[in-house]
Length: 399
Ligand SMILES: [Zn+2]
Ligand SMILES: [Zn+2]
Image (cartoon, rainbow, N blue to C red):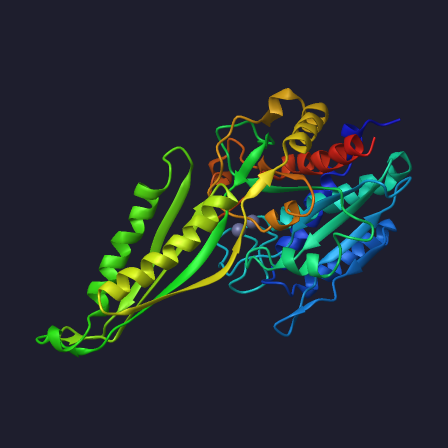
Protein backbone atom coordinates (compact mmCIF):
# COMPACT_ATOMS: atom_id res chain seq x y z
CA UNK A 1 0.00 0.00 0.00
CA UNK A 2 1.20 3.50 -0.78
CA UNK A 3 2.46 5.58 2.17
CA UNK A 4 0.82 8.89 3.13
CA UNK A 5 3.82 10.65 1.62
CA UNK A 6 3.40 8.80 -1.67
CA UNK A 7 -0.34 9.45 -1.73
CA UNK A 8 0.25 13.18 -1.18
CA UNK A 9 2.99 13.31 -3.82
CA UNK A 10 0.55 11.65 -6.20
CA UNK A 11 -1.76 14.70 -6.03
CA UNK A 12 1.08 17.18 -6.60
CA UNK A 13 0.04 18.01 -10.18
CA UNK A 14 -3.62 18.18 -9.22
CA UNK A 15 -2.82 20.76 -6.51
CA UNK A 16 -0.81 22.87 -8.98
CA UNK A 17 -3.60 22.68 -11.57
CA UNK A 18 -6.21 23.75 -9.01
CA UNK A 19 -3.98 26.57 -7.82
CA UNK A 20 -3.64 27.89 -11.37
CA UNK A 21 -7.38 27.73 -11.99
CA UNK A 22 -8.07 29.57 -8.73
CA UNK A 23 -5.34 32.10 -9.43
CA UNK A 24 -7.25 33.24 -12.53
CA UNK A 25 -10.49 33.96 -10.66
CA UNK A 26 -9.53 35.95 -7.53
CA UNK A 27 -12.53 37.28 -5.60
CA UNK A 28 -12.75 39.68 -2.66
CA UNK A 29 -14.47 39.62 0.71
CA UNK A 30 -16.94 37.00 1.88
CA UNK A 31 -18.79 36.63 -1.45
CA UNK A 32 -16.61 34.51 -3.75
CA UNK A 33 -19.13 32.78 -6.09
CA UNK A 34 -16.75 31.50 -8.78
CA UNK A 35 -14.36 30.14 -6.16
CA UNK A 36 -17.30 28.55 -4.34
CA UNK A 37 -18.51 26.82 -7.51
CA UNK A 38 -15.05 25.53 -8.37
CA UNK A 39 -14.58 24.06 -4.87
CA UNK A 40 -18.03 22.42 -4.97
CA UNK A 41 -17.41 20.96 -8.45
CA UNK A 42 -14.15 19.38 -7.28
CA UNK A 43 -15.73 17.98 -4.10
CA UNK A 44 -18.57 16.55 -6.24
CA UNK A 45 -16.00 14.76 -8.42
CA UNK A 46 -14.43 13.25 -5.30
CA UNK A 47 -17.80 12.29 -3.83
CA UNK A 48 -17.06 14.32 -0.69
CA UNK A 49 -20.23 15.79 0.90
CA UNK A 50 -20.26 19.50 1.74
CA UNK A 51 -22.44 22.40 2.78
CA UNK A 52 -22.37 26.04 1.73
CA UNK A 53 -22.63 28.62 4.48
CA UNK A 54 -26.03 30.34 4.57
CA UNK A 55 -25.01 33.31 6.73
CA UNK A 56 -25.67 36.75 5.23
CA UNK A 57 -23.62 39.67 6.58
CA UNK A 58 -24.66 43.28 5.86
CA UNK A 59 -26.73 41.99 2.94
CA UNK A 60 -23.82 39.98 1.49
CA UNK A 61 -23.98 36.18 1.19
CA UNK A 62 -20.97 34.40 2.66
CA UNK A 63 -19.82 31.71 0.22
CA UNK A 64 -17.63 29.60 2.50
CA UNK A 65 -17.87 25.84 1.91
CA UNK A 66 -17.49 23.16 4.60
CA UNK A 67 -16.76 19.61 3.48
CA UNK A 68 -17.10 16.58 5.72
CA UNK A 69 -15.06 13.40 5.61
CA UNK A 70 -16.61 10.89 7.93
CA UNK A 71 -14.28 8.29 9.40
CA UNK A 72 -15.13 5.55 11.87
CA UNK A 73 -16.86 7.92 14.32
CA UNK A 74 -17.24 11.58 15.28
CA UNK A 75 -15.70 11.35 18.76
CA UNK A 76 -12.81 13.41 17.50
CA UNK A 77 -13.25 15.90 14.66
CA UNK A 78 -10.27 17.69 13.17
CA UNK A 79 -10.97 20.91 11.30
CA UNK A 80 -8.59 21.81 8.47
CA UNK A 81 -8.92 25.35 7.22
CA UNK A 82 -8.00 27.13 3.99
CA UNK A 83 -8.90 30.75 3.36
CA UNK A 84 -9.86 31.35 -0.27
CA UNK A 85 -10.32 35.12 -0.81
CA UNK A 86 -8.04 37.53 -2.69
CA UNK A 87 -6.93 41.18 -2.58
CA UNK A 88 -7.59 44.41 -4.48
CA UNK A 89 -4.13 44.31 -6.08
CA UNK A 90 -3.29 44.65 -9.78
CA UNK A 91 -1.20 41.64 -10.75
CA UNK A 92 2.19 42.43 -12.25
CA UNK A 93 3.16 38.83 -12.96
CA UNK A 94 3.37 37.68 -16.52
CA UNK A 95 2.22 34.08 -16.18
CA UNK A 96 -0.15 32.05 -18.38
CA UNK A 97 -2.56 31.68 -15.45
CA UNK A 98 -2.62 35.42 -14.68
CA UNK A 99 -5.66 36.91 -12.93
CA UNK A 100 -8.59 37.44 -15.28
CA UNK A 101 -10.24 39.88 -12.89
CA UNK A 102 -9.13 43.49 -13.22
CA UNK A 103 -7.43 44.87 -10.10
CA UNK A 104 -7.92 41.66 -8.14
CA UNK A 105 -5.17 39.18 -7.38
CA UNK A 106 -4.40 36.23 -5.16
CA UNK A 107 -1.53 38.29 -3.75
CA UNK A 108 -1.77 36.65 -0.31
CA UNK A 109 -1.54 33.15 -1.78
CA UNK A 110 -4.94 31.92 -0.64
CA UNK A 111 -5.30 30.18 -4.03
CA UNK A 112 -2.54 27.87 -2.77
CA UNK A 113 -4.31 27.26 0.54
CA UNK A 114 -7.50 26.29 -1.26
CA UNK A 115 -5.66 24.01 -3.73
CA UNK A 116 -3.64 22.30 -0.99
CA UNK A 117 -6.83 21.60 0.96
CA UNK A 118 -8.56 20.21 -2.13
CA UNK A 119 -5.56 17.89 -2.47
CA UNK A 120 -6.02 16.87 1.17
CA UNK A 121 -9.73 16.22 0.55
CA UNK A 122 -8.77 13.90 -2.27
CA UNK A 123 -6.29 11.87 -0.20
CA UNK A 124 -8.37 11.83 3.00
CA UNK A 125 -11.49 10.66 1.16
CA UNK A 126 -9.47 7.68 -0.10
CA UNK A 127 -8.28 6.69 3.38
CA UNK A 128 -11.30 7.69 5.49
CA UNK A 129 -11.90 4.10 6.65
CA UNK A 130 -8.58 4.31 8.54
CA UNK A 131 -9.55 7.44 10.46
CA UNK A 132 -10.66 6.93 14.04
CA UNK A 133 -12.65 10.17 13.90
CA UNK A 134 -13.71 12.61 11.20
CA UNK A 135 -12.42 15.67 9.33
CA UNK A 136 -14.13 18.95 8.46
CA UNK A 137 -12.57 21.02 5.71
CA UNK A 138 -13.28 24.75 5.91
CA UNK A 139 -12.90 26.63 2.62
CA UNK A 140 -13.31 30.05 4.19
CA UNK A 141 -14.01 33.34 2.42
CA UNK A 142 -13.30 36.83 3.73
CA UNK A 143 -10.07 36.37 5.70
CA UNK A 144 -8.53 39.58 4.38
CA UNK A 145 -11.42 41.58 5.78
CA UNK A 146 -11.26 39.63 9.07
CA UNK A 147 -14.90 38.62 8.73
CA UNK A 148 -14.94 35.13 7.20
CA UNK A 149 -14.06 33.00 10.24
CA UNK A 150 -16.81 34.64 12.25
CA UNK A 151 -19.30 33.89 9.44
CA UNK A 152 -18.37 30.20 9.43
CA UNK A 153 -18.63 30.02 13.22
CA UNK A 154 -21.99 31.79 13.04
CA UNK A 155 -23.05 29.19 10.46
CA UNK A 156 -22.66 26.57 13.20
CA UNK A 157 -19.86 24.60 11.56
CA UNK A 158 -17.71 24.34 14.71
CA UNK A 159 -20.55 22.20 16.14
CA UNK A 160 -22.59 19.16 15.01
CA UNK A 161 -20.35 17.27 15.20
CA UNK A 162 -18.16 19.34 17.48
CA UNK A 163 -14.71 20.30 16.20
CA UNK A 164 -12.17 19.05 18.76
CA UNK A 165 -8.98 20.42 17.16
CA UNK A 166 -8.11 22.77 14.29
CA UNK A 167 -5.23 23.26 11.89
CA UNK A 168 -4.45 25.99 9.41
CA UNK A 169 -1.47 27.25 7.45
CA UNK A 170 -0.26 30.17 5.38
CA UNK A 171 2.21 30.16 2.52
CA UNK A 172 5.02 32.60 3.30
CA UNK A 173 8.31 33.57 1.64
CA UNK A 174 11.00 32.52 4.14
CA UNK A 175 14.08 32.19 1.91
CA UNK A 176 16.33 31.60 4.93
CA UNK A 177 14.84 28.09 5.14
CA UNK A 178 14.71 25.16 2.71
CA UNK A 179 11.87 25.39 0.16
CA UNK A 180 8.84 23.62 1.59
CA UNK A 181 9.80 24.05 5.25
CA UNK A 182 6.96 24.02 7.77
CA UNK A 183 7.39 26.74 10.40
CA UNK A 184 5.33 26.38 13.54
CA UNK A 185 5.77 27.19 17.23
CA UNK A 186 3.75 26.65 20.41
CA UNK A 187 2.21 29.72 22.03
CA UNK A 188 1.72 32.94 20.12
CA UNK A 189 2.32 32.31 16.40
CA UNK A 190 0.81 35.56 15.16
CA UNK A 191 -0.19 38.75 16.94
CA UNK A 192 -3.62 40.15 17.64
CA UNK A 193 -4.69 42.96 15.33
CA UNK A 194 -7.02 45.89 15.99
CA UNK A 195 -7.77 48.93 13.93
CA UNK A 196 -8.91 52.12 15.66
CA UNK A 197 -10.16 55.56 14.64
CA UNK A 198 -9.55 58.65 16.76
CA UNK A 199 -11.77 61.70 16.36
CA UNK A 200 -10.78 64.96 18.04
CA UNK A 201 -13.30 67.75 18.10
CA UNK A 202 -12.19 71.31 18.84
CA UNK A 203 -13.36 74.69 17.64
CA UNK A 204 -12.21 76.40 14.47
CA UNK A 205 -10.76 79.89 14.30
CA UNK A 206 -8.48 82.16 12.26
CA UNK A 207 -4.85 81.03 12.21
CA UNK A 208 -3.86 84.40 13.63
CA UNK A 209 -6.26 84.08 16.56
CA UNK A 210 -5.83 80.60 18.09
CA UNK A 211 -7.07 81.83 21.46
CA UNK A 212 -10.56 82.28 19.96
CA UNK A 213 -10.79 78.57 19.12
CA UNK A 214 -9.71 75.20 20.53
CA UNK A 215 -7.01 73.79 18.27
CA UNK A 216 -7.61 70.08 17.44
CA UNK A 217 -4.24 69.82 15.64
CA UNK A 218 -2.24 70.85 18.71
CA UNK A 219 -4.41 68.41 20.67
CA UNK A 220 -3.78 65.58 18.17
CA UNK A 221 -0.02 66.13 18.48
CA UNK A 222 -0.23 65.75 22.28
CA UNK A 223 -2.46 62.69 21.97
CA UNK A 224 -0.08 61.09 19.46
CA UNK A 225 2.97 61.41 21.67
CA UNK A 226 1.07 60.45 24.85
CA UNK A 227 -0.11 57.25 23.15
CA UNK A 228 3.48 56.16 22.53
CA UNK A 229 4.08 56.33 26.29
CA UNK A 230 1.69 53.40 26.76
CA UNK A 231 4.09 51.22 24.77
CA UNK A 232 7.31 52.54 26.27
CA UNK A 233 6.28 53.33 29.88
CA UNK A 234 3.35 51.12 30.80
CA UNK A 235 4.10 47.71 29.30
CA UNK A 236 6.98 45.39 30.19
CA UNK A 237 9.81 45.37 27.69
CA UNK A 238 10.00 41.62 27.20
CA UNK A 239 6.75 41.17 25.32
CA UNK A 240 6.48 41.99 21.61
CA UNK A 241 3.80 44.62 20.91
CA UNK A 242 3.21 47.45 18.48
CA UNK A 243 1.13 50.63 18.49
CA UNK A 244 1.24 52.57 15.23
CA UNK A 245 -0.61 55.68 14.17
CA UNK A 246 -0.73 55.39 10.39
CA UNK A 247 -2.99 58.25 9.33
CA UNK A 248 -3.33 61.83 10.57
CA UNK A 249 -5.68 64.23 8.82
CA UNK A 250 -6.73 67.76 9.70
CA UNK A 251 -7.06 71.18 8.18
CA UNK A 252 -7.61 72.69 4.75
CA UNK A 253 -5.60 75.92 4.51
CA UNK A 254 -2.57 77.71 5.95
CA UNK A 255 -4.48 80.27 7.96
CA UNK A 256 -7.47 78.31 9.26
CA UNK A 257 -7.46 76.34 12.49
CA UNK A 258 -9.87 73.51 11.73
CA UNK A 259 -12.55 72.26 14.10
CA UNK A 260 -11.56 68.59 13.96
CA UNK A 261 -8.71 66.15 13.53
CA UNK A 262 -8.68 62.47 12.69
CA UNK A 263 -6.13 59.72 13.27
CA UNK A 264 -6.13 56.02 12.51
CA UNK A 265 -3.87 53.28 13.73
CA UNK A 266 -3.37 49.67 14.76
CA UNK A 267 -2.23 47.69 17.77
CA UNK A 268 -0.57 44.27 17.67
CA UNK A 269 -0.06 42.16 20.78
CA UNK A 270 0.97 38.63 21.67
CA UNK A 271 -1.46 38.14 24.54
CA UNK A 272 -5.18 38.84 24.98
CA UNK A 273 -4.36 40.62 28.27
CA UNK A 274 -2.09 43.19 26.60
CA UNK A 275 -4.64 43.63 23.83
CA UNK A 276 -7.33 44.48 26.42
CA UNK A 277 -4.89 46.75 28.31
CA UNK A 278 -4.05 48.72 25.14
CA UNK A 279 -7.71 49.14 24.27
CA UNK A 280 -8.53 50.45 27.73
CA UNK A 281 -5.52 52.79 27.98
CA UNK A 282 -5.74 54.19 24.44
CA UNK A 283 -9.34 55.17 25.10
CA UNK A 284 -8.38 56.78 28.45
CA UNK A 285 -5.41 58.66 27.00
CA UNK A 286 -7.35 59.99 24.00
CA UNK A 287 -10.26 61.15 26.14
CA UNK A 288 -8.09 62.48 29.00
CA UNK A 289 -5.46 64.32 26.97
CA UNK A 290 -8.14 65.80 24.70
CA UNK A 291 -10.05 67.08 27.70
CA UNK A 292 -6.88 68.66 29.10
CA UNK A 293 -6.43 70.39 25.73
CA UNK A 294 -10.05 71.69 25.84
CA UNK A 295 -11.13 69.32 23.04
CA UNK A 296 -13.27 66.20 22.91
CA UNK A 297 -11.56 62.96 21.98
CA UNK A 298 -13.26 59.73 20.98
CA UNK A 299 -11.93 56.32 19.94
CA UNK A 300 -13.87 53.93 17.72
CA UNK A 301 -12.65 50.36 17.88
CA UNK A 302 -13.23 48.51 14.65
CA UNK A 303 -13.27 44.70 14.53
CA UNK A 304 -10.02 43.11 15.65
CA UNK A 305 -8.68 39.59 15.93
CA UNK A 306 -7.26 37.89 19.02
CA UNK A 307 -3.68 36.55 18.85
CA UNK A 308 -3.13 33.21 17.10
CA UNK A 309 -2.33 31.04 20.13
CA UNK A 310 -0.99 27.62 19.19
CA UNK A 311 -1.91 24.88 21.62
CA UNK A 312 1.37 23.27 22.84
CA UNK A 313 0.13 19.66 22.71
CA UNK A 314 -1.54 19.95 19.32
CA UNK A 315 1.43 21.91 17.91
CA UNK A 316 3.74 19.10 19.05
CA UNK A 317 1.50 16.60 17.24
CA UNK A 318 1.39 18.69 14.04
CA UNK A 319 5.14 19.33 13.96
CA UNK A 320 5.79 15.62 14.57
CA UNK A 321 3.43 14.86 11.66
CA UNK A 322 5.45 17.27 9.47
CA UNK A 323 8.71 15.54 10.46
CA UNK A 324 7.18 12.17 9.72
CA UNK A 325 5.84 12.99 6.27
CA UNK A 326 8.45 15.53 5.07
CA UNK A 327 11.60 14.86 7.12
CA UNK A 328 13.25 16.64 10.07
CA UNK A 329 15.05 19.12 7.83
CA UNK A 330 11.70 20.56 6.71
CA UNK A 331 10.48 21.62 10.15
CA UNK A 332 11.45 24.80 12.03
CA UNK A 333 10.08 25.50 15.49
CA UNK A 334 12.55 28.05 16.81
CA UNK A 335 10.81 31.05 15.28
CA UNK A 336 9.66 34.47 16.41
CA UNK A 337 6.05 35.51 16.61
CA UNK A 338 4.82 37.25 13.49
CA UNK A 339 3.21 40.64 14.19
CA UNK A 340 0.71 40.03 11.38
CA UNK A 341 -2.79 38.88 12.33
CA UNK A 342 -5.16 36.13 11.16
CA UNK A 343 -8.81 35.41 11.74
CA UNK A 344 -7.91 31.74 12.31
CA UNK A 345 -7.48 32.94 15.92
CA UNK A 346 -11.28 32.84 16.34
CA UNK A 347 -11.35 29.08 15.74
CA UNK A 348 -8.59 28.59 18.31
CA UNK A 349 -10.83 30.24 20.91
CA UNK A 350 -13.24 27.31 20.41
CA UNK A 351 -10.87 24.37 19.88
CA UNK A 352 -7.15 23.79 20.47
CA UNK A 353 -5.19 24.13 17.29
CA UNK A 354 -2.07 25.04 15.39
CA UNK A 355 -1.38 27.55 12.66
CA UNK A 356 1.78 27.08 10.58
CA UNK A 357 3.70 28.86 7.84
CA UNK A 358 4.84 26.99 4.75
CA UNK A 359 7.94 28.41 3.09
CA UNK A 360 7.12 28.74 -0.60
CA UNK A 361 10.40 30.43 -1.63
CA UNK A 362 12.98 28.60 -3.66
CA UNK A 363 16.40 29.85 -4.76
CA UNK A 364 14.62 31.79 -7.51
CA UNK A 365 14.42 35.43 -6.30
CA UNK A 366 11.05 35.72 -8.08
CA UNK A 367 9.65 33.69 -5.17
CA UNK A 368 11.01 36.06 -2.49
CA UNK A 369 8.46 38.87 -2.85
CA UNK A 370 6.29 39.42 0.20
CA UNK A 371 2.65 38.48 0.43
CA UNK A 372 0.33 41.31 -0.71
CA UNK A 373 2.86 42.44 -3.33
CA UNK A 374 1.75 42.57 -7.00
CA UNK A 375 4.59 40.22 -7.91
CA UNK A 376 3.98 37.63 -5.17
CA UNK A 377 4.92 34.22 -6.59
CA UNK A 378 5.32 30.73 -5.13
CA UNK A 379 7.44 27.69 -5.89
CA UNK A 380 4.56 25.43 -6.96
CA UNK A 381 6.67 22.28 -6.70
CA UNK A 382 6.44 22.31 -2.92
CA UNK A 383 2.69 22.89 -2.59
CA UNK A 384 2.14 19.18 -2.00
CA UNK A 385 3.95 19.72 1.33
CA UNK A 386 0.92 21.64 2.54
CA UNK A 387 -1.38 18.80 1.51
CA UNK A 388 0.93 16.32 3.25
CA UNK A 389 0.92 18.36 6.47
CA UNK A 390 -2.90 18.43 6.49
CA UNK A 391 -3.23 14.72 5.77
CA UNK A 392 -0.55 13.43 8.14
CA UNK A 393 -1.84 15.64 10.97
CA UNK A 394 -5.32 14.20 10.42
CA UNK A 395 -4.02 10.63 10.36
CA UNK A 396 -1.96 11.12 13.52
CA UNK A 397 -4.65 13.02 15.43
CA UNK A 398 -7.32 10.47 14.48
CA UNK A 399 -5.31 7.36 15.40
ZN1 LIG B 1 -3.24 38.72 3.40
ZN1 LIG C 1 -3.34 35.63 3.82
